[in-house]
Length: 172
Image 1: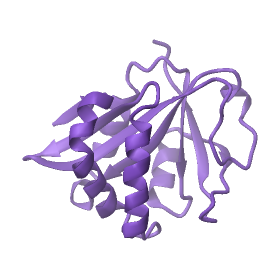
Image 2: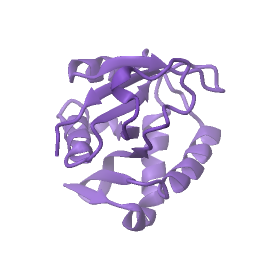
Image 3: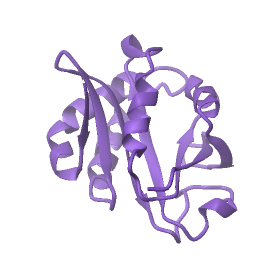
Image 4: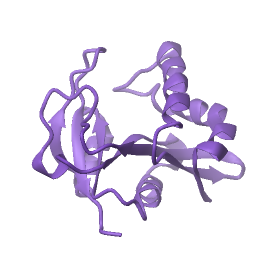
């Protein structure tokens, strides 16, 4: 079952969202541990206050098995640690930033990630969405297969560069 939450209802699911993140991002190439998971919890709580915040959750027999969430980035902003300028399509327009898409390994390969992403993006008013992904992760090839295109890259404090991918959203 796919459920959609705004900031108010999402706060009741923080522990489950963090547990899912810890499970999924412990895998290579991320190999995240307790420090990164604690940082994610702080970021998630902060991001719930951002304009346009939305989260979709996949629940199977009472267990959270997938999530996707994001929020609106104002027209004058771009990815926070981008090493490249925004592409023309991203200049002067609000954008929807997808911060996380995570599916437990036991539920992968069934189209759940695509369904979560589709539900998250359905009805958005922003003309484009973008996300950051490790080019070494299997998700990179999947996003590209789904039509996401390269829009730049990041240089985060962690030193690991991520690709910034962009997709046009259908007019509402």
